[in-house]
Image (cartoon, rainbow, N blue to C red):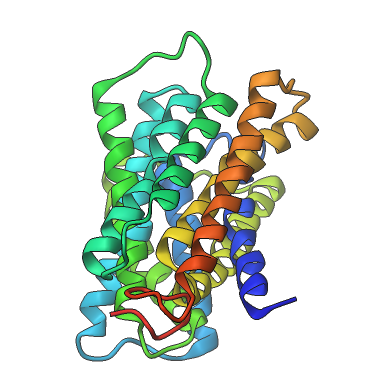
Length: 300
């Protein structure tokens, strides 16, 4: 197995696990408010990682750490939940799935990564696949919900590209600790001002929070930011399509939800879009390629 293939597989673990968020939240944390779950997911995991690495940002990295924590964690999760509350789940997932397409264009501006037709086509195919998997014929639209979903997608897209551009001189473990902690800290006043009191946790609640925090945040974001540092931004972002794919499959396995023909076609489109993105990435890493390459430390 090549190093690049290993990087892809390790990075893909993150969005695949993120696809379990819905089922874990609904089954283990039904009485918890969404923003409280987001804060409890990010802040304890971030503080735990900081205790492990024992390294804080220095100089301008304090500002960058808070900027990345806001874009990738606090703002993204806040807008994600606004969209989830105001839109049917399928519409919210489809709106948020435009993120890889946003990354393609942001990378071309901020990382001098050339726009490739196959990258755009792969992102569009993935959006279509997600729509087939999760949209229903009677899905209703809400302007504020759609705007929140698009803004949330843009927030994490920009955070992904800036993480690649800035390339902090620390390990992915340290960078993840910085972002989860700063993002969690930014969520604290939101929870205190607008969310109901945190209920006394049961054993099931603690199990759900442990999964979301230790596995769904600490582990997955380390793998994600490691991939961001080693692979093209457009390539990494296409892996996000695995999240709704995993959610659909988990619903089929554990919640007895049926898989329709259209959902199966959508699953195929999602997997095809990821494959197409990797093909584009292989072409872009040839010696003649310019701009953003597939190796750590090569971004602008």
